[in-house]
Length: 235
Image (tube, rainbow, N blue to C red; front, top):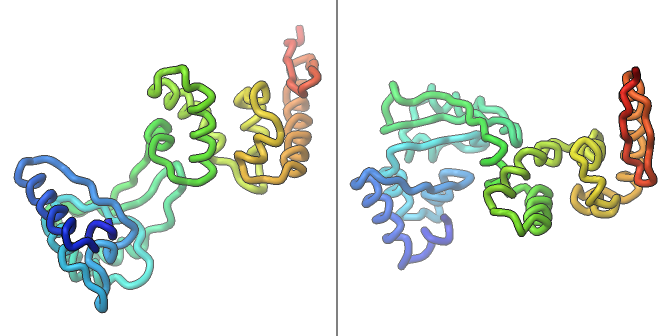
C-alpha cells in the first residue's frame, strides 16, 4: 500500500478504484499495519491516503500501539472507540483477534468483534515464516492432488504445526500424532520448526516415552525400527 500511495502515477488510480467500488457496491480491501501507512506522518504526509479512508465504508481496526492521533483525525473515532482500540490485547495467532468494526462512521454501527479464522482460511493466508515454509513443503509433496484438497488436508493437520512452541510439544504432535514420521526425518522436522537437530531428537524421545506410557494403559505396545508405536488392545 505504501508503495502505491508514494507513486505520483499510481496513487490517484488507487483512490479512484475505491471510489468506483463504493459507487458500484463492490469492495476493495486495503490491508496495512497502521493508519500512517495510508495517510503518512505529519512531516511526510501521503496526500491521497485520506481519500481512500474517506471512501472506505467499512473499516476493521485491530490493536494499534503508540500515537492514536491519526485514528482521531482520519477515522473520526470518538474517545470511547479510541480507548477500546487501545485496550485490545495482542492477537492469538491462529485462534482469534479482537477488532473494532466501523461501518459508515456511525456510533450504532461501531462494535467490537472477535475474528476467528477457520483452519482452511488460516493456512491459505498465513505469512508466519515457519508456517509458510511448512506450507510450501506440504504443497510440493502433494502437488499431484487438486490444490483445494491439498489445502483442506493441510488445514486438518496444520493446527499442530501452527501451535508448536519452543519449549513444548511440537515434535510430538508433528511427527507422531499426525503420522508424519513416515515421511519426515528428524533433520527435516528440525528444519521446518527452526530447531536444532539435538533438540528435536530429545523431544521425540520424550514424546515416544510419554505416548508409550499413555498407550500401555489400554494396549500392548510394539515398536518398529522407526520408533513408531502400534497399539494392540488388551483383552
